[in-house]
Length: 78
Image (tube, rainbow, N blue to C red):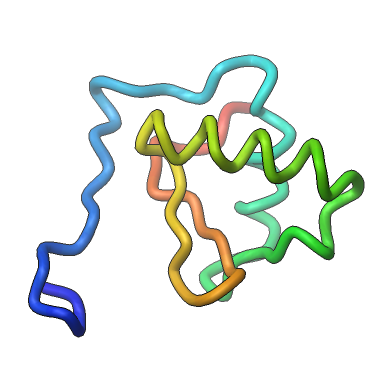
């Protein structure tokens, strides 16, 4: 449970995988580690915002703290 009493988001690796056009985001988030990455550290903030929205709808990322994004899974493609 999270601090608001709701269930923490869970990755469903079997149902979702990283689309080819979002592999760069998966790799960037993996490199950022558990602290996550913020949009302002990404090469193109507008492209990053669009990619993060799509990845969030797919259940691949979440905003762990204000402005800090982490990957939920599955593993980053090679």
